[in-house]
Each structure stands twice: as C-alpha cells, then as structure tokens.
Image (tube, rainbow, N blue to C red):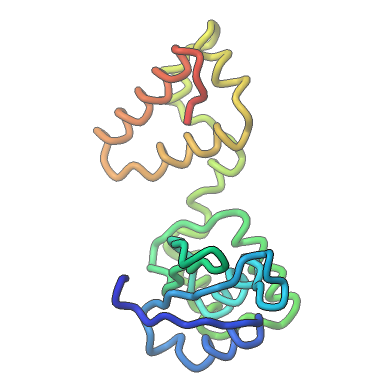
Amino acid sequence: MDDAPRIEVRSRAEWRRWLEQNHETEQGVWLVTWKKHRPDRYLPWGHIVKEALCFGWVDSRTRRVDDDRTSVYVTRRKAGSPWSALNKGYVEELEADGLMTPAGRALIEAARDDGSWSFLDDVEALVVPADLDAALGHTGPTRAAWNEAPASVRKRALYEIKLARTEKTRKARIARVVGRCSAGERPA
C-alpha cells in the first residue's frame, strides 16, 4: 500500500480518465485530493467513490497530506468483500446514468454469485442476530441501552459482529457490546 503510486486529480473527469487507463494494470493508488476550503480543486468523496465503483475499485484508508490536502487509498475491490447499501445504491445510479464499465459489472456479478453483494443486508436493516439478541436479554437496562442507541451506532456494532471471522471473535465482540450496554454506554 505504501509503495502504491500517488496521483493528484482536480476533477471527476480526470479521475475517470486515470481509471480508464490504469484500472487493469495498477493494484491501487493514493489519490491526493484537496479539501473543501479549496473549491477550485476540491473533488467530493462521492465522486471519487462512484468513479471507482464503475471500474470495480473501492476506497479504503485516508491520510492527511497537509493543511490543504488529504489522500485516499483506492484499490481494486477484493473478491468476496461485502457491499454496503450506500455503494449498492451508487451502482444503481451509475447504471442508470450509463457510467458502469464491463470491469465494474463483472465484479458485481461475481459478488451476487458469491453472496458478498447481500452479505450485509441484515446489518443494513438492523436485524439483531439470535446470539446477540439472547445476550442482550429481553428487558432490563442492557436491552434498553441497546434499543436507545442511535441506529448508526447499532449498525456499527452489528457490522463488527457480522465480520468476525471466527466464532471466538464473534463471541468476544458480542460480549464487548453487551458489556458496554450493561455499563450504560453506547454499544460501539
């Protein structure tokens, strides 16, 4: 990641041109962008993500460059990585606008086939899995803390639990959520 090329673009069209020329040959890139207080050079995050999705790429980590600029690591999307509702919504919009490319469509088709397209649907719908539901209890302050937490906080907790790779990790994450709720804290 640290040895990935670093590029700076000033427009959505320039970013798309770079992706058209490099999406098959590069593994990832640090995209340097200007902050909002530089409107003449500012490229909104949504534009970065949407163009990346068109080519089967996805945004990742961000880093501060200086007071005026930041950088985001954008890379080819890994097979099997889960799709957020936001990105799936962007894909619908991009398809309707005729902006998706064959590379982006192929990745989406593979995600539908391997289940990663719908993997987070229950998290997005705030469905509490049975093991977490049982651990929270049906009444009492622990359940109340869960129920009163903002939807975005509950979603983050559900996301962390869902992405656990082992049963041991899943149980530990559930225990952490329950412990925080029992202490009257936010679950995540």
